[in-house]
Amino acid sequence: MAPELIIRPSALARRSPASLDITAPYRKQPLDPFLGGKLGRYVLEERIQQEAGTSSLYLAQDTGHSSNRRVVVKLAFNEHTDPARANMLLTREGAALEQIAHTNVINMLHHGMFRGPDSMIYDYLVLEHLPGQTLTEAFRHRAPVDWREIRPYFIDLCNALEAAHKLGIAHGDIKPQNIILSDLPTLDKRPLLVLLDFGCARFPNTSLDDMLLPRSLVLGTFPFLLMDVLMGGPYSYSADLHSFGVLIHLFVTGKLPFQGNGIAELARSQSLGLGALPESFSADVREIIIRLISAERQDKFHDVAELRDAIVRAA
Image 1 (tube, rainbow, N blue to C red):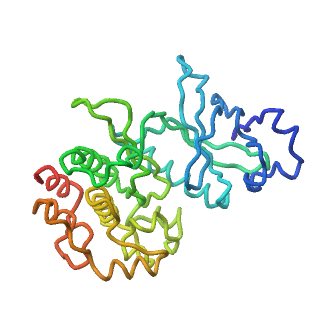
Image 2: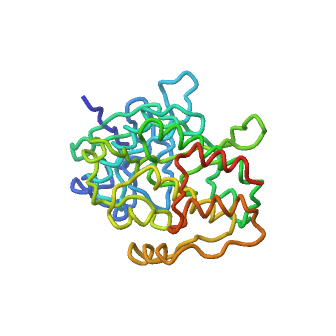
């Protein structure tokens, strides 16, 4: 039986009964009814604001843990998204993360359901809490970034994607905001890269993919999506590699390779081809970017392992 989310009395006292419907947009309600609430053993202490997303994130205290550790609780609801869609995407994320155990992928501690104030059942995830900065925050004022400095993080990202792809999971939304440089150090004393947010995860060539999500629904972040996906085609592992290529281009040149204010414009930008890369780049780096995102190149990387080998070799 799904546990109820216990809402603090002060929140209830200031809201009319109709406003307790979880489908009502929070932007019309000045007080977050979940903040300070308790979901099983997890006390929701602080709302984590995001630029966009389909779920609500909270820093929480795990009262069932010996050290009352802090965790992140992700609820299948967001003021900007239909609850049914949010629930569907969080179900996908849980299905993906429960299979992956890797140093460079966020660790899911629990996947459960709760009964909301409207008596509907919603999914929630409990994730490890990793203090740190997103890739965007870490290099915000330093683009373009020197290849030798950022290369180790690209290798880490290859390791994370390889772990997912080997299990039949494509991430579906590779972008800087979904990558964190944790305060946890690596063996070479640099921040640990961790891949987050599998809410757009795809399961290529499986019935599970179509069962959890209509193929006609385009997920992901437009500037990073492959043209075939933009035009409604099936999502494949190669689409993750294309997004990776866009990310590499963004950080080593300081700009996105393709521009557009919507699907049609972005698809047209990709069809026009990749612009000239700086002459200062080594031949190896230029080759990596071109093979990843140029529509004209037929010799794409076969898989993440081949891409990682090329990144390791690139000077």
